[in-house]
Length: 406
Image (cartoon, rainbow, N blue to C red):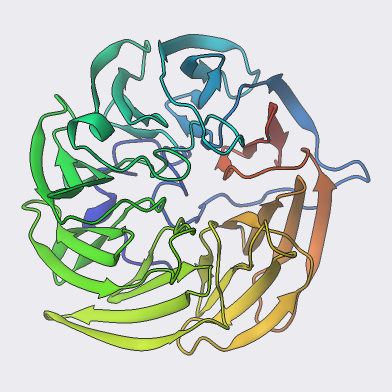
């Protein structure tokens, strides 16, 4: 299965961890791809077996898997909590917590919404109020902490701080949103600032990593649009305005990079754009609001096609779509599918939609072909899933489940 270059950008992500790990949002290469094979798609009527489940607190941070631990970042009462669990049994290995000041202004939930990132024996968490902490993966010991929203005077946003941290080129990079500090890079070992750039307000989109023009790059979607930086220096390489027309909106999908092309998507009458960046020049390949306008889920690319969600969770019912990467042409749509997180794996795509349905379908432009479906969680289900060693980890608003797919 072709995927974009497994080169320098993986150095801080996948190479430091066993191949079976899912150490951050969207997996080892932050593109929703898994290398798992020979999974079981022949489910019984009641669905695949549930290995274990547990009650959890609030928030939409996704589970991650690293070094024999499932890590969940959630909130109980006034504490944001990072818990490490045994993947096979769900037994607790350690717990770390701290008091948070965050209160949601809209009455939805108090977070956290940012998924932990594991790198070089450390776990980085970013709370809804901007509390950035580094924890020792083996023990849960706090290594360092700071509040990036208060220190950089960043705007609170509609739903607090939500972008997930990323380590690229030896730098911990963050979508912060402060004046002169729209994007910030820190030393993962100490939390010390290494560089900062732009005045852009932060979106809810998490950065990704790539090799662009022969350099390790950090790729962001801020409230302004696409921003591409040299990871080593913070020098801006490319920018492309891409934002909703109204303020009451979010940009939450992570940019997808394929060789020298970058795909962006957002809802709220924004749409999608594919741009080509090379040799200091940026070219618009295609852009429209008809192909794939995703409110917050990141699509996956398999071959020359994108599979993702078109529409919003709060307006109507979102569609699942297959879109030609090169042209934006819609190959097929599956109505009333609902917003959904997606993983490309084992020759197809597995998704978990907002109603809690786990669905397996073919990665084919020839039409929607569903192979398996099971209800494993309750509505609303918004967090992305994690897949490691044949176990799928998923959560809704009240519980975490471990599903056996092998």
